[in-house]
Image 1 (cartoon, rainbow, N blue to C red):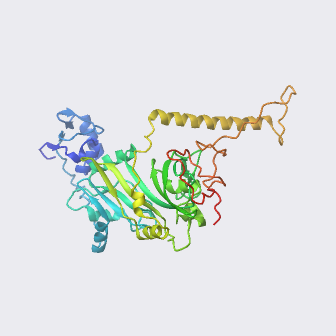
Image 2: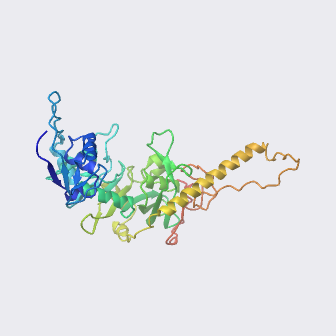
Image 3: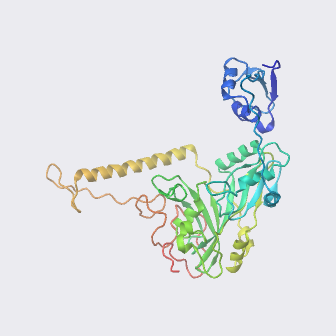
Amino acid sequence: MTDAVRQFTVKLDDDGIRLDRWFKRHLPDTSFNLVSRWARTGQLRIDGARAKPGDHVAMGQVIRVPPAEAPKPDKPARPKRKREVNLSEEQIEFARSLVIHQDDAAFVLNKPPGLATQGGTKTNEHVDELLDALQYDLEGRPKLVHRLDKDTSGALLVARTARAAAAFSKSFSSRTARKVYWALVVGVPSIQDGMIELPIGKQPGTGGEKMQVDEKEGQPARSRYRVIGRAGNRAAWVELQPFTGRTHQLRVHMAAIGFPIVGDGKYGGPEAFLTGGISRKMHLHARRIRVDHPDNDKIDVTAALPHHFAESLHTLGFEEAEGDALLLDDGPQPMTKEQLKANAKAHAKSVRKERRGERRGRGEGAVGDKPAPRSGGKPSTRKPAAPKLGPKTGARKPAGASAKPGPRSGPRTGSATGTKPGPSRGGAKPGGSRGR
């Protein structure tokens, strides 16, 4: 064991993290068991006070660490693993060409369609791999804060430090960050400004690769859409804002109300493609991101459209300035803990009612439409329960309905709020049956 007691001053990037996390960053060869033993014996201290591995550290505090233990003769010290950067000059140049905003805390990239955000099965090229090209002179590697689907293009936020990553993650989880998407959809919603509130869950049998509207087991999901322009009754250009972060949320929601995103065959099927020179690529683009900056006011960045999306807008007679003219509001406030608990309680109550109704039906032994007589011989006069309403849709719908609704006169949203439908130029077709 060496003689000197070590002292370390907590830096800004480590402000607020746990002590065991600090050891993982700065003394990775020190095992958790050793840190715990130092804490139990009073050898581990912060500003002179005894400390535990779960304590949080603050910038400027002094961590007192016992002398390092010498490695055992039969077990040499583990060499520090150095991260290998294996990028070609072309990859480095490409990664840096994606940067549309850079400061001390973050990058914003304009991700092209077709490039995955993270690696996976049969996915070798992705943004996460390219982040080594953006490390520059900083010690830590840049970190992804959120993701975009492989075929979705646009603004992608990347944190340059651990402290910035924590701040951005907090902004996303508290719903103060704003993401604005542009999309072309098949058909024209009759409601110009609507809020979609439909729970989303994994579709069974797809291994989590495909999602669906699931009113029993799905997680709450909210999306707002605003119609920017319309190309007759054929297609609409819409602005989308997700207020929750479910997988494929915008794609599932737009398909569920009968207006799939152009090029999204996964959720829209064959009807998601337009003829007349419109690209078959997906037309969903993260146009703008606005998020609180850890040190300054805000990061507010707009990402240029990919070539195929810009060409489609031009072909359909749209001007980009129309979309940028819409003001970005703060949207609905995040639900409080009390509201979340109330929603969960109401959901559980409805499930219990359904189960009681099923048990009652089996117990009465009904045959056909006639209820079985009670023990007194007098038939029941109780009226059958009315079908339940879908959550906040106002339309009668059995629980667990599929993501694709039947014919209707307008988009089935959780609640349509804001502006009234604008003057019709040809009329909106029913969401479930557009004759194409």
